Length: 216
Ligand SMILES: [Zn+2]
Image (cartoon, rainbow, N blue to C red; front, side, top):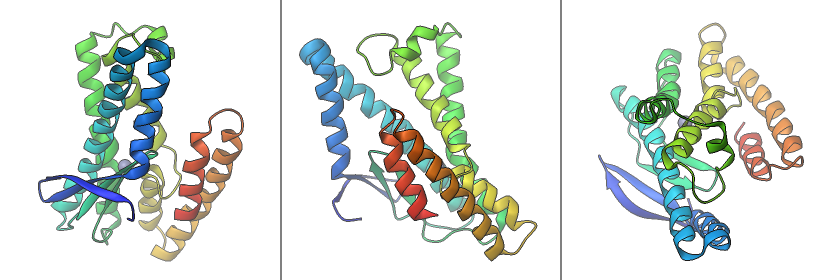
């Protein structure tokens, strides 16, 4: 992908960041700086980096599941809307595709469970409304982020994980072509819904809508 730079190599996989990801960091830094100066900015950028560490671990979940089926992942790229693990090819068996799709969100389930244990379930509702503000419990924010990653990927919008699960399940019953066609149509329909919702005050959804629509 143009404009992406390698920052690390883990288990034979290049970890890259896209230049727009740096803009996201700057945006969070700026937002938090306005609230609480330099220490706020450091906290904001730190939180964003931890958030994307969870996204990165999610992508490694896909990559390691694919590796179990002999499929290599040359690189993982972090974008402002999330991560993309570039698998050399998709698994040919629907059951394998299902496992690879679920492996990503499964990582976030594990992280959320560990954080919930750490928090001893003492999460207050207000911790979640603090998500884009300085202060509050960092662990609670990260717990929320991981739960959202799982919930969001459960939406069957191909090529998002939920859509890949849908496609794999359809491919167990129908031909590959029909399964992909149905999953893509469902994905595009949901993308239109995302686009509509983005105008109701969630501008990031518009980028995801475009990504899902074009991908589908
Ligand atoms: Zn995923």
